[in-house]
Image 1 (tube, one colour):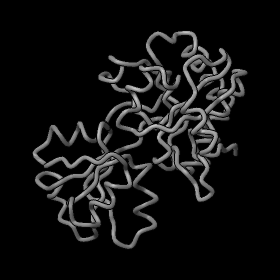
Image 2 (spheres, rainbow, N blue to C red):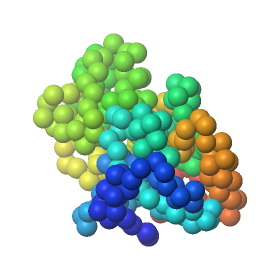
Image 3 (cartoon, one colour):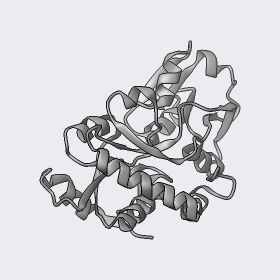
Image 4 (cartoon, rainbow, N blue to C red):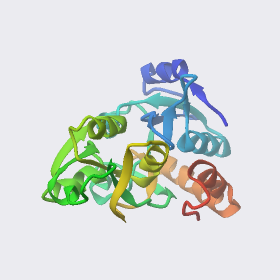
Length: 242
């Protein structure tokens, strides 16, 4: 798997918008395993890092990865600080009013609630629920009778549950599953549910040519099975494939 050191990513972050036409700056969070994260060697790794590198290689483009906090990831795309968002972002109508998306490269995974073992499931309806801010899960909780507690990063939502600041966390099952499976203090509560659409690459609404390029590559990878191989590698045999 190709990886990129944070030093290189930092250089990309400082680069101006006037890059060569065949260089695409790929914006990601680097804090959302297994989609994208920083490994123990201080390198970017994850499903979307492998996918983004493969897509750029097939399109004959050079990728430069740019790290950006989730809260400002859309505004900084629109401002031209990078050219794409590839960061586990669900395709929603609200986001499509501001940016455009490629077709999905991952089917939507059910969102799940996780809480300390023994927690009464009724907290889903009337407790304090932690989510990462500006996510489809945050929007969902805001429409319920539960109290929403938002955090900038997904790791902080888990920490809030463990510290007793929140009764449960609501997040993508893909993110929560390995955490719950590997912990001795957390369990899923309630039923899985679908919130939002599939995951796609975000682009500025004016970048029709670049969107069409990546759309064609995603279609090619769906047809030849290489996208399914990456999905199974990072999410397991049970993950939905194309």
